[in-house]
Image (cartoon, rainbow, N blue to C red; front, side):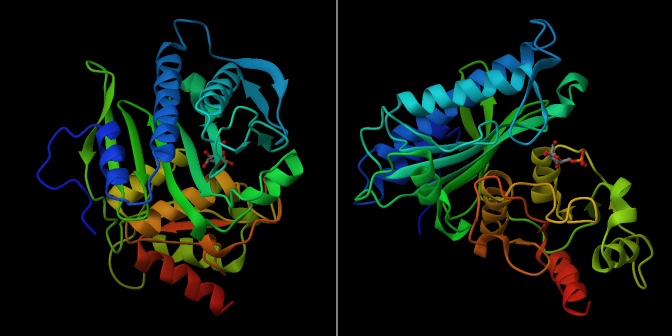
Length: 339
Ligand code: P6P
């Protein structure tokens, strides 16, 4: 399928989305409007993150969220920015945010084809240290013949497997601001050009290497790992053949996944004795990142099942995560199979 990228340089995200939609006979423009609201939200958050130190936006907000985590001031600012823009665009019927207990039924929706799950500012514990943080999102298609009227109905409508994702991606607020996304056909990376205020195409057609030299995990949890994870990390450090892998761990999922996507290797957040279902959330962290990994030629698993095949049972459900280069994921899966 043509990607619409042929022979075009400095393609902006806005034009990319328009071209993608113009190639689809049944496109109505709703997704284009939704994507525009999404990228405006990313630009608002980017500005706040860049100015956080100067505008005294570091530190705690003095409140907590459904995850039991202390909310940072920027967590709330980012969450409000996404909810307001996505509500006001009128093309989102249901929203789920990491920062909100329940699903949100959008009263301003004029169409009911799309739901979005997002983590407005993932990795926020790193904000005050100026470590890269990000936004993760997944857009799901709804059956618009039955409009959700309550948070419970909205939650039921959005709880679909990752195979039903229409668009997934992340923004990373780092030394540059990247927006990496996929509509299912290929993964493309855009970089915010502050001189024109547009995301421009810088990484067309990202393909993850089949294997990598890096493993990424919080080794501080090693005492609680299961046998398969312990064995995998041991093999990475003391391989029977070849060179040992390097350990790189930032502690911000967007940054660790972005590096894995570009350089290859494996990113892991296993389940362990402390967190029997792992730490990362399925709907707005694991599934969107798994969607990108598979679209880039990689894999994503809990060790026992592809992440994209999991049917969610709650909107904040956590799952174990292993994602990255196909050969590295095959290695952890075979360790689980022999466990
Ligand atoms: P730990 C950040 O809080 C986050 O949700 C992800 O971005 C990151 O991958 C993970 O948690 C880090 O968790 O336990 O290693 O600090």
